[in-house]
Length: 88
Image 1: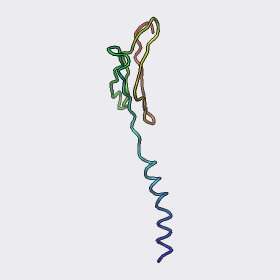
Image 2: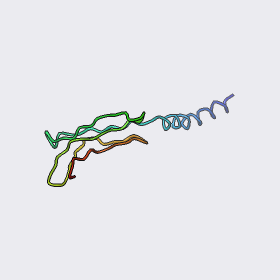
Image 3: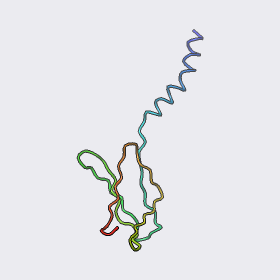
Image 4: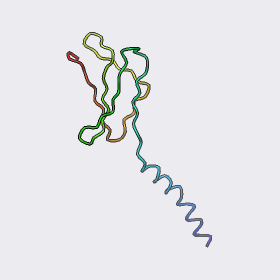
């Protein structure tokens, strides 16, 4: 009986790692306050059953658009779209 317990104890870390690896990580996009009232706005949308993050706003300087984030993590197979104003 002891060899079976030893085998079970040896296999348990592999089972635990497999379960943890199979869980889905969620993405998170969080604008920071660096750009004050020009900061980015992140909106979660569902388009045809697909969840996306739409990023709008940002700071315009001449023909450039700047965003600043404290967290920018996209889930596996996640989609992020930046809405650029005309001329950018």
